[in-house]
Image 1 (cartoon, protein in one colour):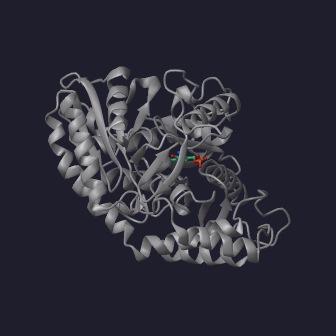
Image 2: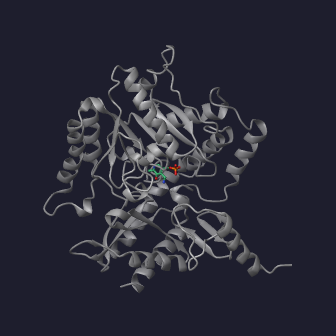
Image 3: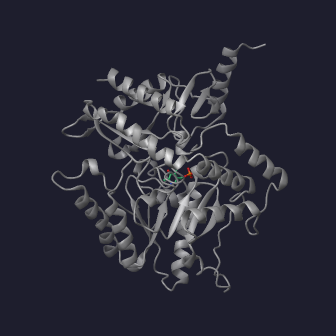
Length: 452
Ligand code: PMP
């Protein structure tokens, strides 16, 4: 019989031989963390170490790990009806669409896919087709922001504004343009946040005009840039962008893949602002990642351009797994849990507490800025508070490593190519207990104290 230690070593060796990790190379000094269990906000690795998952996986396990209700919902649906294509329909897809509309004010129709990238691809395709069927076939370009991430497939990656993720895969899809996002911490000295945000929003209008407005199909943006460094705009920014879209006949696509389902302390991130998106994409927290599922929500009057009964007017997009019955059933149960346990409010309240208690870190020599909305917190590390020079790779990695050594997983956000990969992220399950929050605060404070 093998001993536990030997088993663990062979697991790491087998992993190295057979599993290609996502955006990371195998590293002898830093072997993979093989995660074996999860309960609540906590995960356990193959060596039996426990960690509070301060990133909810990839910002997605909103209701926490180990929820039997979700496993049951999947089991019951799989044994009743495992599969039906959405060229037809099925009850969980209908029920979920109804529920999502209840959350959004009954103005949308829902197209199901498997991932956030898929949902954005659908948004791009249907936006182009909508314009064609609306008598404006010249509109095909999309504008997004530098530092934004919108997915890994060719279209979604084209919309992404992080060059290092793209340059070895180019040429990507043509027709994707970028403008700078508002980064309030680094705004020009002497400019108010509001003025600066208006100016940044106006960059969209300039781009639209320079590119010839009849060629622009849509603008895609997250309500706040998440993975690109937790960049929270002033409310005037999104309002202004919407106004520009409306003035120029451009569709506003809001990517809620991370911000949706309570992450920012509201059901959807855009609900912090006075905007009504034309298209909304969602994934991650929709099922709390228990099963893959994403949605492209489309305003009903846009959908009507596809539902004319004319030949070839329908959306020519299909995927086999999108809207899988068990995934929809799990999503419905997940939304029920979020509602029953008031997890959106919990995210708002605990997020506020986290931010308040960590506010004193602002005096730390390497902390430039702390910002957040709900349970999405960013701590921007700098080498020098005056020049705001981003913290070195080593400094950021050290803090993250020491948090992990103390049992807390935190994330690293930003954009490597611009040198701004210096933002620590805390984005724990919304179901965290008060003790979990105490633990996060204690670890972060301790690690910063030891790095003064
Ligand atoms: N949009 C945003 C804002 C994301 O953060 C992500 C993934 N992190 C995606 C889209 C792509 O989602 P997926 O990985 O499910 O394709």
